[in-house]
Image 1 (cartoon, one colour):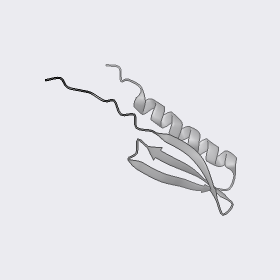
Image 2: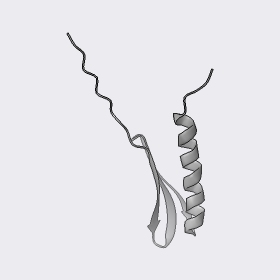
Image 3: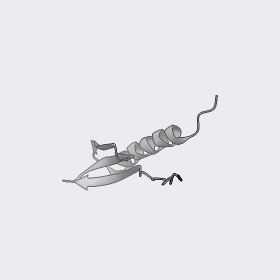
Image 4: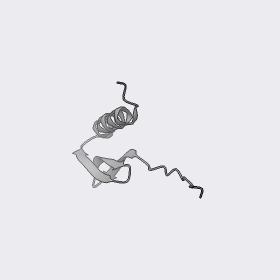
Length: 66
């Protein structure tokens, strides 16, 4: 009996959402978490938060060395 494997790619994304004049970092982590981080008064502040999340995800996805 053959076993068929299907790889499933789960998306992780971070973006900026603007609502009522305030900026939020929107985080979707592998379909598990969905957060709005903020509010931030400027897009630059929200972008700095986005960079933090992207770095965090990058570290989590890197293979761990022994």
